[in-house]
Length: 221
Image (cartoon, rainbow, N blue to C red):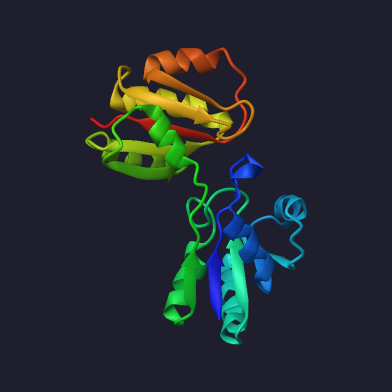
C-alpha cells in the first residue's frame, strides 16, 4: 500500500535515474499524465508495467478509485509527461488524498525544469519564489501587481506562444531594466539560456522562432 511519485526526464533520457526505472518495473500500476508520451519512455527502458491515464481533466473523478485500490495493498507510481509530478502538473490531489487515508507516499528525487534554469540564470538563488504559469486573463494582472514588490528571485513557466507577451508585461510591471534569464529546451540538443535586461531579451526573441517549454527567471525588486 504505497504511492511512489517518480520524476521523469524533461528532455534527455539519460537523466532517468536507476532507482526510477527499478520502481516503475516493480509497481502494480503506473499512473501517467499522457499514456502515449509515457509509453515511449517505458519502451526505451523496457518497462512493461501496465499504465492508466491520470491527468488534470480526470484526476478529480479517478482519485477515489485509486485510493480504494491502494487500500487493497496495491502499489502505484505516478509520473507526468516530464519532470516531477505535482510541480505545475497533476499530482497534488492524489498526494493529499493518500495522506488523508494514511497511505504511504515516497517521492523520488529527479528532474525538475526550474532548478537548472534558476542555477543557470546567475541571479540570486539563496531565496526564490516559484510562480509556475501565470493565470490567464484577469487574474494575470492581479498577480503581476502583487509581484511588483517581490524582492526574491521569481521563477515562471511559459509556453513559446506567450513568451513575448509575458516579457512585455514584465517590462511594464517590473521595469524594462529588470534582469531576466530565459531558458528553453533544457537538457535537449537545442538547449539555450538568454540573459539580460527585459528589453534586451525581448529584442533577442523577436528575431527567433521559439519552440519548447520555457522557464523565465526574473530578478527580485
